Image 1 (cartoon, helix red, strand yellow):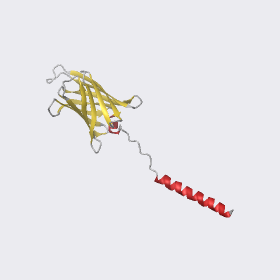
Image 2 (cartoon, one colour):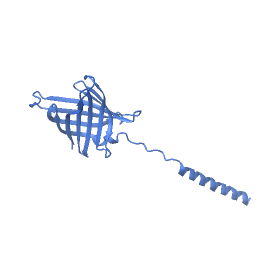
Image 3 (tube, rainbow, N blue to C red):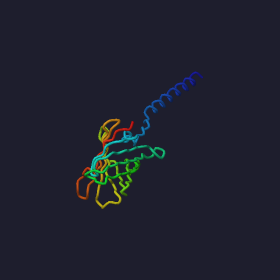
Length: 186
């Protein structure tokens, strides 16, 4: 009986050790990465000055999660008062949505402009420090074929960023259309 109890005890200890070692050797579950991380700095309400082809003006923008946090909505309004470069002035509005394309493993931006343009961009690059984010157009509706667009976000600090919107005619390099320096609204 002593031998049987001793064998059971040894077997139990050996199995426990084996299971413990197997458990320690098994891989840890992968941490889920946050596809929205590059855009977190943009969330919130912003105001700023815009300069470019339409002249100089003021801009307001808001980035917010919508639809169960599956998208980030962008609401933008820029006002260019009458000026030498643009005698009538203009009001520009656009609404956009960032989404995450799981198959492509990329952030996508779709913009709907008051002028009728619809731009679709895909994330192209993020700098190593995460402070420069570049999106290139993959489709533009309601413009002549061959045009391209680029959105670049340069995050200066928690409360400031610069957005540069550039366009390229067919067979030409990108040229800046507008640049806006945003400050977080208090």
